[in-house]
Length: 40
Image: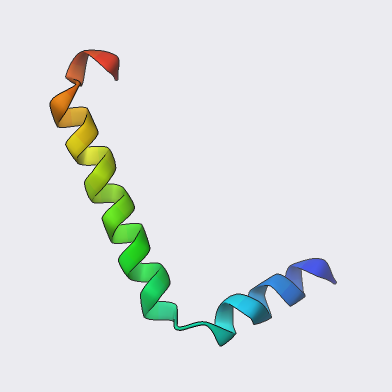
């Protein structure tokens, strides 16, 4: 029940926003890995 509610809430929000956020997150992680390769 709770899972379906969560999916509905996310669906109500613009899906592209989530896609852009995922893209930015990946870019940030890549940048951190590039800046601090020894940490990973």
